[in-house]
Image 1 (cartoon, rainbow, N blue to C red):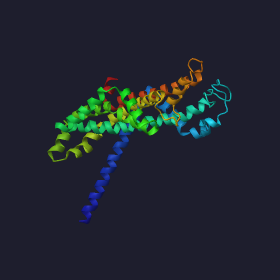
Image 2: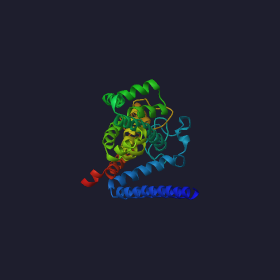
Image 3: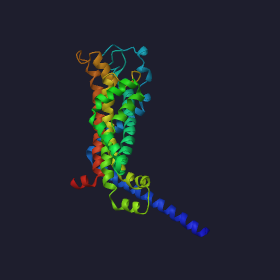
Image 4: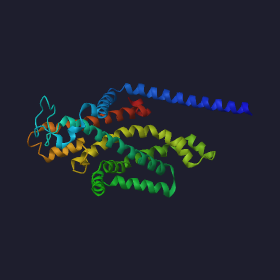
Length: 308
């Protein structure tokens, strides 16, 4: 009895090790394929630079530079040796605002995307796998959110909930999931008709077991690729809401910088250093995530690989 138990444990460990090795080999193959995409590597390089700047913000610029009461620079001063990107209407360094603003913009983009991916994946799985009224209700819910324009809904929710960083993350997350849900639903409908899922049904596996063991692992690559594209949308949404005055007034982000620049008339007064830097940062980060997403989609989708 003891020998049988020992053999079973050894076999189980060997199976786990084999599964782990396969996953590692799969990641290595994916990384090797990703490196062949020049645009994807360019996007990854840009993103790494912004992440390093966001993480090293306390080392690159003092947080005291965000305090209006401690600002001692000229009002809307042009770039100089002391202020490389000029100053804002309060005499604060635009470079300092830009560095610390990267933290908020990236945080909102990542956290809102996480909420969106969780909601979209769950609703897509349920609406695609469960037949009858359960699947139809979730599918109609997805269609309802798709019909409503995103920006007016986000503005309405942000106005009702109030101006705070958490509310902005929540608003973007709960309004940007329908596209993901529709994508996951279509994948689920295809996967549940495959032989191994039918085999699991034949031996009596429950629906949630089938979803967790067979369907979800097969849709995760698509979720992962779609995540990078959704982050770009979330960052643009945060910038838009902040530009419209619905962002957190106590936090500095690229969107709030653009909003402040617009309010003080930086465009008409020719203060380009207050408008162009945050705008360029938004464009570069969105471009980076888009390039990475396109490269990942081609790596994870065999049909796209065969076409290329």
